[in-house]
Length: 222
Length: 81
Image 1 (cartoon, rainbow over the protein chains, first blue to last red):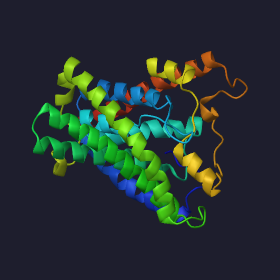
Image 2: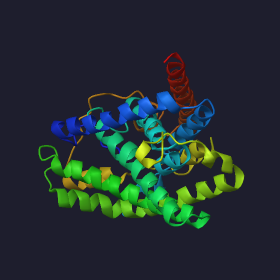
Image 3: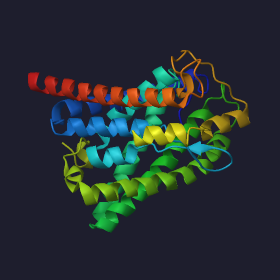
């Protein structure tokens, strides 16, 4: 889902940079106030793990491949602000070193994968936990969060491409439909992997799921 | 390390949905930056699995260090404030 340079109009790039900057400001300000010594090694390890996990491409449909994004697990274990910071570091290195994603489209890529791909799964996970206060609720929330987060992130990418009339001469509906069709399948796989990782953490290190979350106050954070 | 090894040796073929959609609709890239390791392969050593794996491991460790560094920096700012 990494959009390269040239795919988006500069106006769309500017808008997505501005939207993402608002979240960056809140995320770094919150982390600056509430990040604890105990959370740093976990944040570093999970960021490195999901960078490596994104190198694993598995086949999906019509000859395309997909990889785990990791946003849902980062958000569930550390909170969405920490997830955004982690995804920013991953995507920055991927852009500058490996050319995976563009510089003008960096704001859009962070918006899709680091904001939408992190906050939507977390909100759905919290809602599911409030409705069903059980382990089953946690897994259902994590699965649906990962699936819907992936689909909404793909919709955003499709919307950005569709609105870029100078660079991408196709309508919003065509671009969104093309992205969502594939990412529905990818989202199911992201959901399954998210639940699997969560289940391993629940069995082996349940303490990691109980750490304070770097999250906005309207999502239960400080 | 397991992710890097599996990714490089078994699942290294990448064909992202976005690239396929773009190709289908005729959009083209116009890169502003020439990355030092394009497509996760060292120029001149394409297909060298051992080198690609080493690159993957080095950058995974670099990301670990960068994230911990940023975390420590934020903690330092918190203490000063």
